[in-house]
Length: 192
Image 1 (tube, one colour):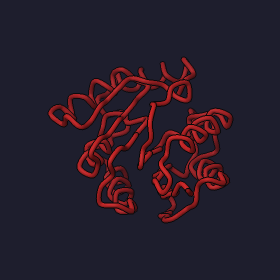
Image 2 (spheres, one colour; image 1 turned 180 degrees about the horizontal axis):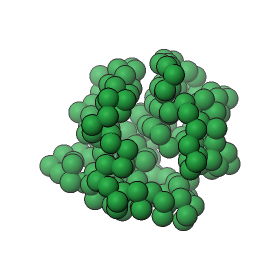
Image 3 (cartoon, one colour; image 1 turned 45 degrees about the horizontal axis):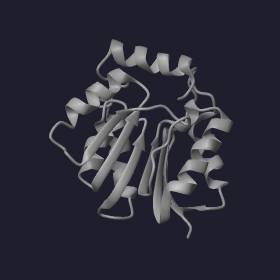
């Protein structure tokens, strides 16, 4: 979300509503989070990175499974909401950042790309996946979760397109997958 127009779009959505996608109330969202968490191969992760955290609904659940969690969003309003939600969770850091222009330093044993891949142009997603490949520890997990339909603000053709691009990466291997008519959730493992 390094495109200023796209960042402004997300800022506007989050300023208009504390929960622009109704992630706390819609069954689709609650079900998607539960199935995504069930795919995780480990009971806990030492250092995790979640870009595109939005209002923090998944951040809150990930926090229980991570020793340290870094969550980013391209909307200052979303970051404010997520920070309020995560108040008191000292092991969680929530920051305003955009990608692919920014990427954190260090290694992660879990990276979560949930509902973010199709907002990037193909070359931007490639840049993000290059970062994932360099920062994901050998044997670490990439959890990718994407809606399978298409929306006006997507730059790629939905979640299937995003996951095909991830699967084409030679350093990543699909280890677990859930798919239905609405969304696709997949664990990719970083090969040593």
